[in-house]
Image (tube, rainbow, N blue to C red):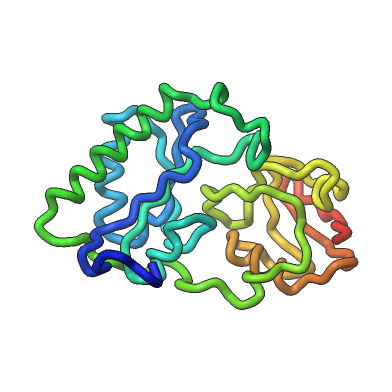
Length: 223
């Protein structure tokens, strides 16, 4: 986006399909819905047609390729079926793709794209969350070893997965737990989590407060 080979003024929106092959329970997350006021009404009108349960995340900045377009004031939509046990592993092979589910998602995206293509004017851009990562988010010195849920609407950050023998798993953190506090500081969403992570140092012992069902637990994570 910093060195485009087309005029960005001609770009109506950016549609990002990042991991859409593992549809489960017809549940789909769409990020960036707050970057234009037309996006959520449009998706509301289409989700029943395509028999999908869509969760919205309004923020334009996220862990994928659409972020650089959002920073340039271009509306974005980020389609995502969630993480899974093969995430970023060689075991994530073709036979595990839910081809039927992927077609449902692609049919939805086709209808969204067709609607955008027939508009007389480009979708109005609106700011939805921060437009740049804070400095300490660019170079973390530590990791918890978790896979955050990008559909987590807060308060807190829901955990989709934990890395075997990583700091979180060793501390007793489990998939489905919700991080609500790190080192005495509240965690409302993934941005709070990344900000807190950037403050931590290797070798530090950190108190992490989580929600697990109806229980609130405090665990110690050794980084």
